[in-house]
Image (tube, rainbow, N blue to C red; front, side, top):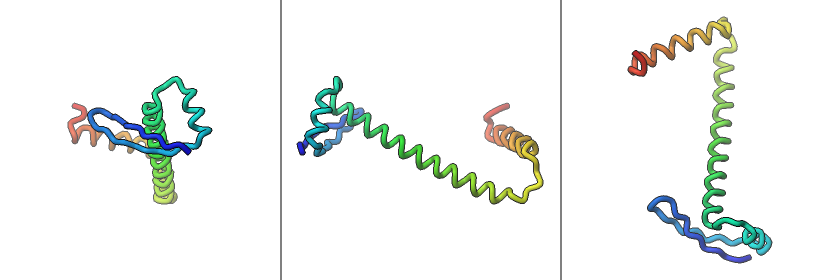
Length: 100
């Protein structure tokens, strides 16, 4: 394995990252027509975005399950719920001066 030091620059802040990569990966990286530092920054940002999305999707799924349990005995129709939701949204928008 080869050790590579990269300086990750984002705006005025800079962090140094040292990684070890296998020889085979090093060969593949040399074939890239791009700056390795920029490639690593983009890969890290992409991976972080994927994790945030996965977390938010899991949270959304959990919320839907909770809402389903809360409303399983409700006598309101889907249309009633949509109508009430729209009324609530309008009132909240008025209260916080988002609409006139």
